[in-house]
Image 1 (tube, helix red, strand yellow):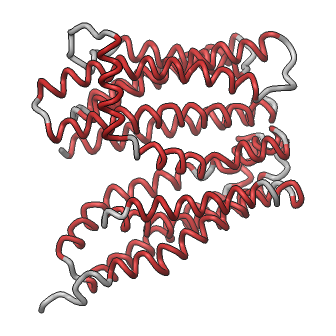
Image 2 (spheres, helix red, strand yellow):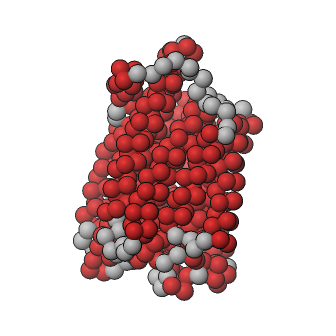
Length: 418
């Protein structure tokens, strides 16, 4: 179990590191508009993988809890075929998105080359991502790590070659990532051992079987994705792709903080489950206090180091063309502080199983964010985009810590028996 956990952490760190360094490289080497477009398209790829994960992977996980190994094997084989079909269809839709997001592009390569290679990239991404998900569901995280190490090595090698032998552009970037995804998926052992034939009726049946189990996961996915990504498209629509690039570049430095939050979540979930099982309210307060202190100290420490070495970071990123970078980073630091405490409360509420309550809260928060995003930035500029996000996070923080969590803690016994 320890080996699997370490492999999972290393895997996530490697993938996040790759995304981080791709962002840094593009910020320094491509026009702002190109980086802004990359950020929007990357978010679309995340949504497609998340959709297949919510609809199919969650269903497979559910099958494992109530079926024998043979039943799970058959359904996993059919689900893999379904995932590839859905992934291909969503990839074609993503091509339309890539076309629509660059109305001012000139030249066949910039417009149609990007559309072509982004579609291929999404298909390849779906193949590899579904394979790694199946490996994790099968508790083979070491094999998933090997898959992603090969992907990372291929991506780095392709990027290195493109840097020295070609002028880097977004079509090249997505072509290299597509190649790395396809080869990594093809050159590693298969994750699904099912060898039977899959026909149209099988695909239809497994779709409805998955849909019956996981249909309510899709609204949650949509709300979560919109909460994290709507501002990119709103900023691009209202202020232009350069604004999206500014926001993406400044937020890129928050990626290590996200890893810290995920690490805390992995450590805290067993403790939360134990405290809820024991059912003593007073035992929660030291845990919440220590967690808040740990999270805030790590976040503040990270930003202290970031500001201390800001001159070096700005040189590395070539931020001279990103005139709002420093100001946005300061506002993002406020956002992260608020988000961190809200996130901690959210994880505790998840431990209590209050998914529907959280879904309703997220809907209200997203509605507030949408109203603010489509009214304030066009009047007050790019900084207003982050202030809109802070406002929605403050709303969730107040609701969770001021109402939902206290109500939940009141259902526990006041104190432990001495």
